[in-house]
Length: 323
Image 1 (cartoon, rainbow, N blue to C red):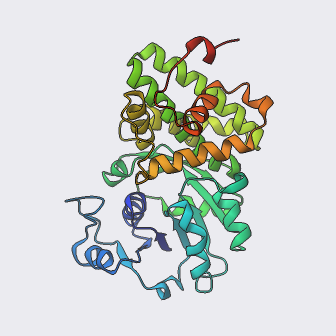
Image 2 (image 1 turned 90 degrees about the vertical axis):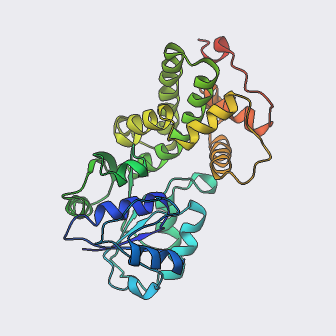
């Protein structure tokens, strides 16, 4: 199977490296940086993201779009802001029946998911999603990892099962592609809040009180946006929320810790986690009706903090848990 991973960043590199372990996969990592391509091909390293870590020798890299001609599967591991333009620029090259698998997280204006945007703007129907509780550094160490596959057809499912054979990647699955995409955004929003709570209180009781509340709010939003409730209990839901909320490798949790310790700077426009987090909250806020938001005190607290650029994140327990 000929596989291309678009995006030679942290997660793209890790996924490409793991997939290349399967001898039946011919995996190519695409980067526009010729220096990075040369480094991967000559040294089997990507020092910018994994210093002193060797990549499998079976993994190759390219910056030549003509290498896309014979690709069967394209993994998307790009910032959400670059996905549509990148795919549009290479659409004339790849096969018409190519399978596109989205690894990236984010929502576009009006709450359109990445998968839906690709289908509509690039006019490709064979698009699925793969999300779950996974840190790139762990995948690089071949740690057994669960990802949720959101798919439409049995052929798509069988293809993914085939390419992850003999790797550390495991899947649970659902046909609720929308739910998988939405949950990948919601878990980042609520992980930020759990980070604030841990910074302020460092209490297991308080932490899990709010984690329970966060899970409940995510369920409400997921159902309103059209996702299936049962998707919440897959890796992309419960698993990813817990991983992102409770582990210090999580950038969103770390941002929450900084806010909780009053080290947060609203003027830091260089932090992509801040920009993406605020944008996700704003998009969700515009999508959700006022009546529904009455049931979402944690979400309202986050939205109020960022929209009004408050200096301190104050917690009112009775307000957040009033019945």
